[in-house]
Length: 103
Image (cartoon, rainbow, N blue to C red; front, side):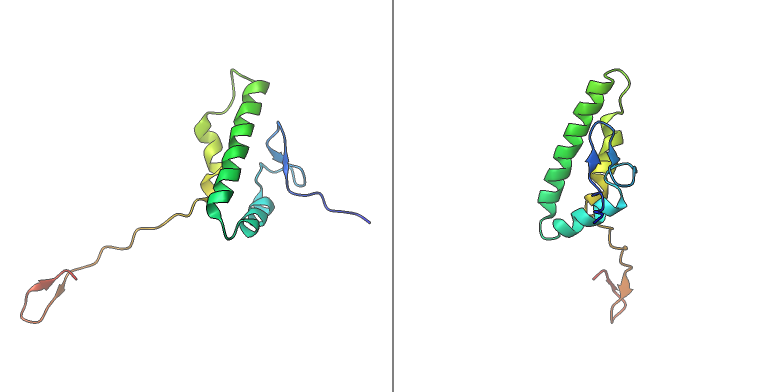
């Protein structure tokens, strides 16, 4: 019986074990969103820990030429944040009697 390789991080390389894409790859993101569907905060805490470990490992491997912390944020945490788009501005309407209603 052949078992599929899980989409988990390959430590010190920051790549997915299964597909070699930067971790978390698309499959890992789907799995994580499903696993943490009821607790987004726990997902962000987990991913924050993974970011911390990755930054530490990258610094250990190459202390003089590693990525800036901001470069690690989006791949590890940015994708999992709930982004709220602002509501479009409401246009004033004319109320009965000719006054503006900003409602």
